[in-house]
Length: 328
Image 1 (cartoon, rainbow, N blue to C red):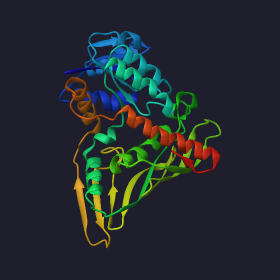
Image 2 (image 1 turned 135 degrees about the horizontal axis):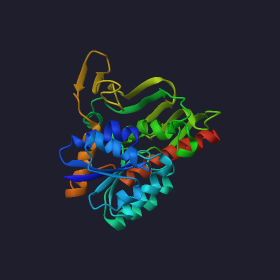
Image 3 (image 1 turned 180 degrees about the vertical axis):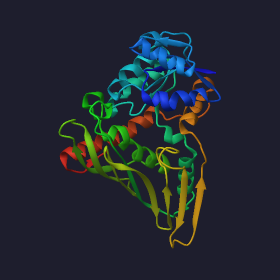
Image 4 (image 1 turned 180 degrees about the horizontal axis):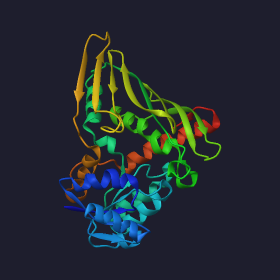
């Protein structure tokens, strides 16, 4: 069994990753750390975790931990990923792993030097619905892909929430804008060439709260918007000359909606629907990561892939500031 340590008692860890690991076929959470030892002990007791530490450094030196999951604020991802790598631990870091593409290079160098597995936690890429979308597009189910359209939004104006704190790496693009970009790249195997964008910022928080993006992939276009101050919505549609694919719950399956992929023909006379039950992409992610770390099997979301996705996010910010089309 792969032995996980969790750096912090963050909500996403408590609600999604720790339960996913504890129900996985090849992993167990053996340690959790918090700067507040009482909080670490409380979460450890809740999940039956053997070791609770009052500092992240203590966990990284533990011989009871093979790898760590890092759900710290975004601004701390690079620092603690590097520290974990140098301690010889495998690292699964919550997205976005960085706020700038060029900050990922030191992680790649450290990963290669230490011989560990390091991956950004894009759980969506492990969900079978996205493998199905990729196969449908590659198999010509909708003919030639011409346009991808997406949306991801929620409403949150809590000043204490890290998503609304600029100094912690908050903002809509780092939090949710990364999803339409990564699933488009995953499903098509293509990379964007140019991007234009409008980006709006909150006058109080200083974080981006709305972005409308148009990315040119050469043979097709991606247009999407994301917002942290709009009614909740998730949508991804892939439109070709012979049909279109709609993903009903593209990013938060089972929470937002049931996982379902619908394929419509050009004349709206036939629809094929693929359902994916209760597949848990968090569990699939941690199982794949553990297999990669222990046996070398399975692919995980690579740091090289992270660089490519973050370059697009960087270009979106630049285009929003300049008002011009930016090269990715």
